[in-house]
Length: 292
Image (cartoon, rainbow, N blue to C red; front, side):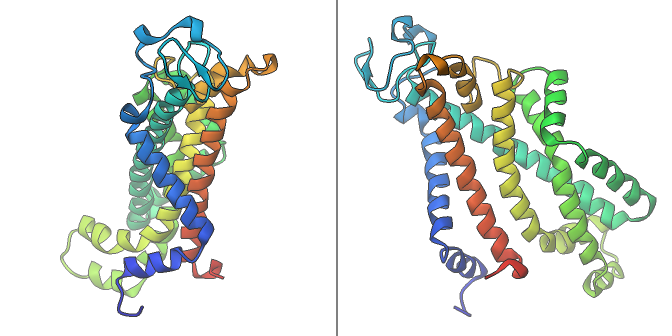
């Protein structure tokens, strides 16, 4: 094992946890079926011409006018719930990954930049970030979503702005520790420009804790998007994410039509829990203090 590559050693240690391997398989499977949703879904939930109100709110196993079985039932618009979940899963993953990537980029740039510059700018940037961290992310996301309006781009911007501070705080702590090390001082004595010192020397050594935060924040972004859509300030009705599907069926829970909300909720919970389990395993590996 000593001659193996770092990636091979990482995977060998990762697969020691059966729970983490199963969770990773679930995440990969859900991403795969989300990407292949147009090919595997029985129905296109966005095609309003193929929807029939006579099929609305039908229980699991109902055979609709289209001639195929609705294995998970239908929602209030007559959409096949399995198809809606597959497409909703696709949208939820898209929102979480894109918003997480933007938050990662913005937060890392601010955190590492502040640690590298130092002085008053560092104090100012980090106090602003600390002030944002004092507020719950859901509160900031709600306010930003209400101000920006509905739509994918608006929601991505709201999620990224609500989450970048977590990346910035982590990046600043890691970069501050690296900034004081001898190898950085040696590099700074050369004529290399500052951006090369940051990108080639400081940033790579800050990645391990940032990867852990990224996995957690992607799951949080998916949960935040679902919450905002459930409250009606997230995506529009024409783009039903898992949160929107749960919201659409909530009013029918007491009438016995549980499947409209329960099945999208199960899909959302499984996705978030699986991502968090993978993140927990990665955290245990990159932090020697947490290794068993």
